[in-house]
Length: 120
Image 1 (tube, rainbow, N blue to C red):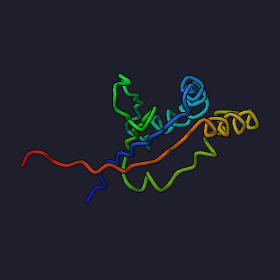
Image 2: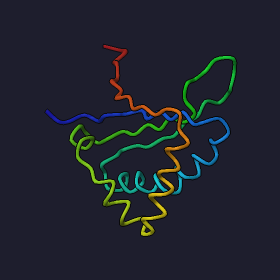
Image 3: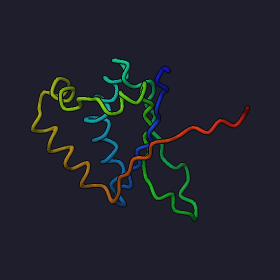
Image 4: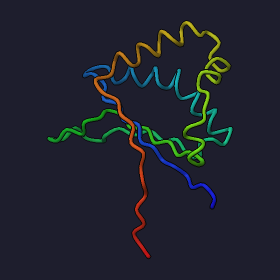
């Protein structure tokens, strides 16, 4: 039986007033690692979202990133550190900025999504 793709939603709740800084650090330090894994075929899709409107309700998250992995073994087998070392040679800056990116968070959680067939 062939492995099926797995989509995981990664939610980030950023402290008030720091969303732009978080997004800048994400784009500079984390997205290149994700893009490399798209190129390698480990991921088949990476998308980022934010709520369009503030509204009266609380979405509970500031940014959501969905990653579709090729299959379940792709979820559990990875080497982000090796990719980061290759793509971001100033590792001290990378570590400092990644630490800062997570300091900006009030919450972070990952949800493995299970697709529900609606027909048949």
